[in-house]
Length: 502
Image (cartoon, rainbow, N blue to C red; front, side, top):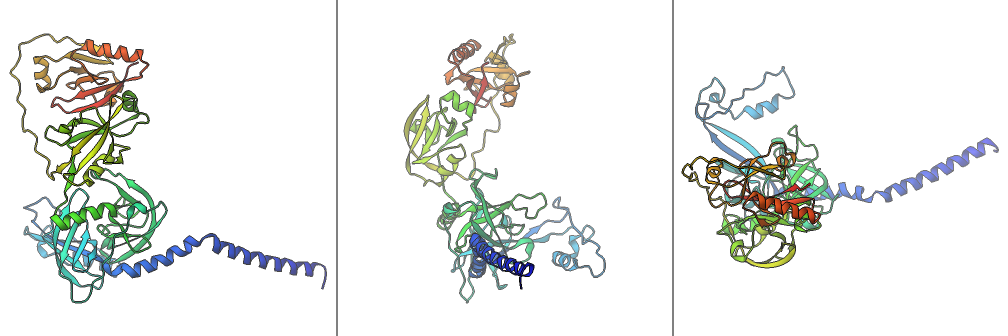
């Protein structure tokens, strides 16, 4: 053979060699993908028996006792494949539950997820899974149903600890891992009870850490794209070692199903709360006794803090630990017990995780200089103290003419008995009252309104409009672009606001 035939054979051989090399290269280029699914199967097999369903029952009054709306089964075509799902949903509903069936009480059932952390009969779930339940049952992976009772719960982190009598056969318990070691892109496995279908395994990666979804003061969620749906709440999030690194708690979904954005409480938070629930039946957190706000770029520039960081103290509780330690309104906390406070949201978490009664060093920036204060932490009470139901209103003052002047684009006036009465400003509040913010877009965006009182400008007290104008002129000479205002509401609660001096 020669010519075109020989050339064709050579091409076929070359293609075969190229294909073999390509396959080898492909297998070497994607080892993580190959290992991921295999490890997921191993994890599921290892831990599935420790994951439980949480079944709750609540007695709900009839329509005459509440505003609840009854639901009747939909009319489906004969032999509809969805009939069994609706039959399951409505099988526990009694004749009196429908809109025409009467007004007696009925029992509402719901299902969530949880996991066993002690083979002696202790499980973890979300607080919202068992909230308001009259009866709680734990359903093991083999279908065994066991009554459970609450050891303790914590609403702020949405965690609950349950106790139940273990069956004669040994139980499987899982261990907590270290959520701080999780990396973005790392594989995780979620196991739970979505849509009441029973134990289901889904997998994905860690999409983000330290997520704040505005659900509470201690938000620090792990975000994952592992499918988490309704009913997964309270279930565990595992790493590929089979350790629990989070408790699945929330999802972002316009449809109610997974769209790849789920959130889990990190195990570091869970372990601390669970330990306290086991010991005390409640979570006990440190308390500093301050109100804080964010240090924006403008506020940071006004205070000489570059880059902007820390938590700005907007108020100090007279009965809190911060007061005797010398921490003042206007201070910026940048370090607490050796931990850097980079943003306002960091401080509540760090303080809450610190043991009650511990004496800690708190580093603050005051007028551009760092100071260290020693604080002995108090205990944060679960229930906030009730505010005064009513304020004492000063007796009507004699009619007098109010003289207003403009500064910083605001209409301002010295506080008088008449203005205190008009805006219900407490006697303890001193400063210059705002009577109008019309036409000042900057002030409106900062939510300043008539009745607010300017207490300080650039951390210096002001008692009249002339004081404010003098401070503004001084700031302009210093080349400042904005003025830092300490503003009080009529009740005496202060915050910090920056306004342009141009």
